[in-house]
Length: 391
Image (cartoon, rainbow, N blue to C red):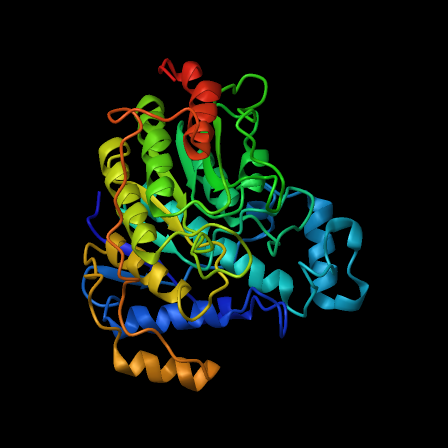
């Protein structure tokens, strides 16, 4: 396998634009790429690659033909968007070129999966991807085509027998779970804010997989307000043991930055430094369990200047084997670019000034009265026995 990493990027992905005032501002993608370039990560072992858009046969690996047709119609004539498919809503407004932009993002994730599976790259990143809410027959939660599911489906088509998907977005990875609910070849793990307090109101620990695939869906429903220590504790209490038991051939991860304490749409209190720590853990787990095969995607994240570009630049740097010291200064040229585009002041360092610490759930014990530990234990009890693990 090549030791190289690939960054999937086509400037046209910024055409995924729901319009002024929508939280999913494509400036977050452009600013991330400019920060990657400011740190010169696009040189050396990291290869920047633009894949072709996902075509009809690829989209049909996950999405229904009638839904794809509806997206195409809405893309050509937004005013005629069919609400029954979730198109033209406040969350997913229709816009001219919607199909093309969505298919291009999906194509980058599929291209990343192909590169990793074929050995062209050890790691591949598409931070424009991670649109995990789209369902086979409908749009949802700012997501038109589910690029994460399409990447996994393509891996299965290429011959993969075990693929693990780890989702650390603040929202439940419901679309990916639904796509592979009855497929024992795919393990989906989602850590997210509790469905009682956040969209999409799914992702309960009792959701563990369909008939013939029992135990292949794991959901950690975190209490609102969970911060670095609890978030890292939950991740390390669930993800490594499940991956060790499942032994995936490829790991696909989704790194929504909306767990951050500055994010306007959710209620967790995670720092940039903890997000970086989880990205490093995912990298290490890919090497430990999947021969290094790692496809890393973006996701949510609506603090589009302060958080998203720094979080995903750390992700790219880790995948490229050139991790950035959290204390590093943000390049001045990038801060000028931020102000030019947004009239906002950019952060000065690649850190929130935190040094995340966490206690091991297994080694240090757990508190049955603690809500975070209750959430972790509920997941372990629901899923671990199916893998021969003790809860």
